[in-house]
Length: 573
Image (cartoon, rainbow, N blue to C red; front, top):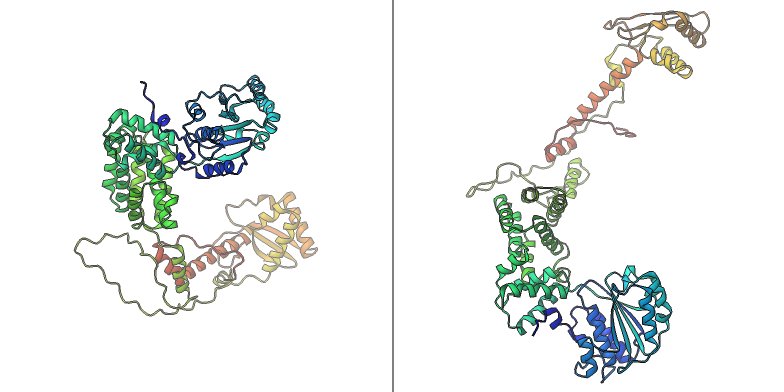
């Protein structure tokens, strides 16, 4: 006798056998009991979750000799024929093989005849999304108004590929992925009746390999039994399926939380020695940290976690040893490492680097806590704000047996010393240099006047020093290194005289000479004055910042130094 695989041997035969699809089975049973069975159904969902099995059960329930009944008897000839797949009135059609319009036309010709022995003629079309557009169009009218003795049941894993015109003519049922505890419970039920010895931990590994599919889980269990026989060892399951032992994942988590870099490197070595794929190990570790994150963020919400009860208890204990913000940072490092492995030839190195970073992450002080301390130092709030988390000490850790350091008693907070009112920009510069000549304002006005007429000439005059400015005489000098020859003769000088006559009046004499720097009686050019003002203001702002109590406290808290001082735009101080 040929061997019948577990997925076929233990295929659900009643709605009660459907695992994890109670919303579907209950709706269909109520429809049969109430006589409100639609003429077309669409079952959608992932592979191996019970779509085709539900279609067969529904066909048996409708055609059962004792029915229509909410549950088929599975004893009458009609139920047995449907179970064996040789009923003349229940047609199972593979949509992937019968995609053409001719196949649908043949189906339409069959529909008009009454069933041979059963109550209904039932057409089950699997992977219906594979039908061609013409085939769907040929089915539209028949699907909308079929004969009363015909029922359609469509199944698909990709409902978005089914035309809307078909969807609107069907009752749609979405099948869920089956949770891991439900798969483990069903596998336990099956192995107990098959008289197989296997632990719950191994069943959880098999169920996790199935990824929410009961058929995939049973196929994996078949593979394990072929390798191990009736007595299954945990190590054999891990070796055969090429998955990472869950105990190793929890050891990794514990080593990261204990900040043990030697242990995490040893774990990566063991994973590599097992021959496990390093990226798969990283993905499973990401899932493990996700579980911890959910437990830390949402409390004990077991329905959000696809884990067994034993593993859930261990996760709860580990989640108590870490904060939510640290879990987020560690999970971010893992996600980056998993992405980098897809494009790297050194997955082990990437995994080692990620785990070392996770194990040596510096605890952070909440930003709100730092802001509150700064406000206290600034005098905006009264009293002392207690820290909500310990401040990281980058110095040497305390040795075993060493007495902990006793904090110094806190001194009463002194009000911050009053800082002198800031000096307006340029005031210090004006006080530092000698008084300007009487005609200096006239010189600035003259340069502004020229700027409005000819920008290029004004930029040259910015570098000129006003040696004499009066209503009858204008003498300017240029420092060495500045080109001014075009203004001392020819058209340049004539143009300068014209502007001077327009500003100061007719009859003014203009002279352009060289003026050496360093003389105390030689006035500064406008460009030199501006540069001196900026330098003096920067020096003044830096002195004010260095003596400001809030800045000093911030530098002490963050362990920084003052690099640059910048004046806020629109600030009065």
